[in-house]
Length: 132
Image (cartoon, rainbow, N blue to C red; front, side, top):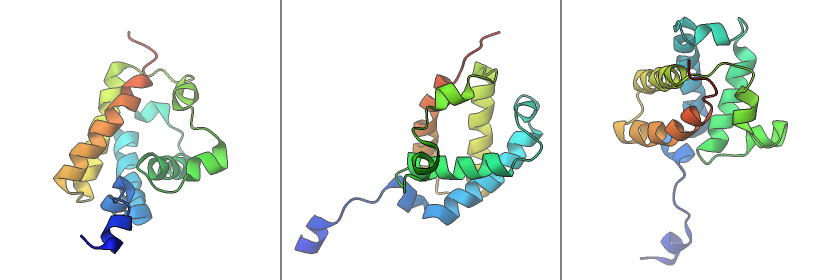
């Protein structure tokens, strides 16, 4: 193994999926699915652009890219930020389903899809604050 290879850091998931452009494509595919979903759509504002920009920043940071979200908004505290909304287990699963479909639509490799969805399972279910 060469000295150069020894000093290289492993690729982050953010880099593996294609960086900022890939995250942006994913979010742009994801939110129309969310808005059309009967359980999720009512939770989101009509002007979805600010939500999309925050999601781009958060996912960038969450998957190992620059800390854009924290730099602008402070610690993510995502559970607290979602408390005003009724997040049920069904909504968490619907959110993950929309994300999976968006990943498929944007052509992410199946291995990356599996990794990312597994990583997003915890937060999605951590936000649950209602179980009707």
